[in-house]
Length: 442
Image (tube, rainbow, N blue to C red; front, side, top):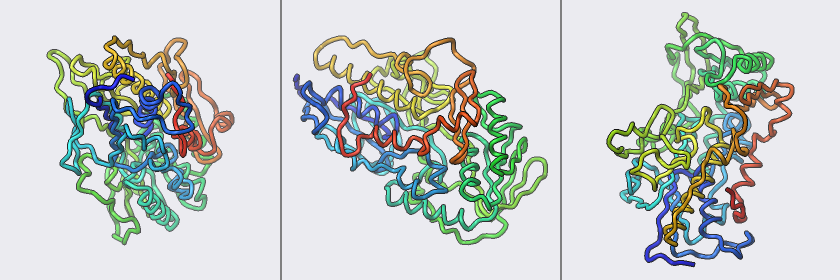
């Protein structure tokens, strides 16, 4: 083993699908030796210092959050504490629970600490932001469990619930609400004539409409909510998220649930709701990245994230040492957890190649992320590109609609292709709870 005079510092900003996949990749490429078999911790490597920064104390399986609101026992299991992953206790890995406020060319600034985190290599894996409760305000598992119980109590007490926004999250939430609370009046309001905007076919969207109607969800389509007025103020059982002073960098600290509300649409329609879940879109965390660009180069931040090249390095010659993966990167038509995990794995492997080359004085050919996975992170792409994206929409426990490029999978088939636990078991297995990573892909 070649030992560097000073440890090479690798920072991972964000610890969910992309970030943790990158740390696992770094672990297996830089810390595991030839004799490592995954039965015990990899040996120390004084040449490597990996710092994972996340405001939460664990991984959160966001795919199941709408179900978690209606089934708290399931929702509680979505949070996998970092402390349950012994490989993160490796002496070369430090986990910091902090709020990132700014990313600079050679360091990270923190909103809740005067410290800065210096780095030689960086992966930005900050994901996207949503307001609570889909964007989770909690920073610890205990707070997450408490918040889910409070939201569930409100849902149980309500008679009329309106979901504003018919994207993927809004449609899944409306379906979960009606599935688990069949006696309640559940309405989905969406500004377009068909739900789920994005690169999907109308055939797919019409299947979504049909399935929601079969469940008994009331649909108000083609009408935009222009006003939400609290008709009478009652006491909420949900406490305001702690740390609201950081809401400028963490939208999830803002509660997007309205209580005892009169809604008005642009047609003049009025709807009363005991609860209103506002699910209108996600916002990028890319503005936290404040990096100057080379002369004549376009900005790094575009509408759907940070511009990256095929190796997932920022698309500017000034930053061969900075990578971005997952939802924060401008890479995919549709932001998918599988694609984020795959990209994190590739980014981690590419950083490992740069580090190994630096230690040994060699050139490092980097992996092309597009060649390492197909849609959803499942193998190399093949065939001509489609104008449509890939999405698996789980509509309650008994229905689903899937689009795979040009192909739409009808509900009767799609529901057989969905894991009952919304892939929680798969995610848990991939986190190596109580064990150590052994997968050296790619």
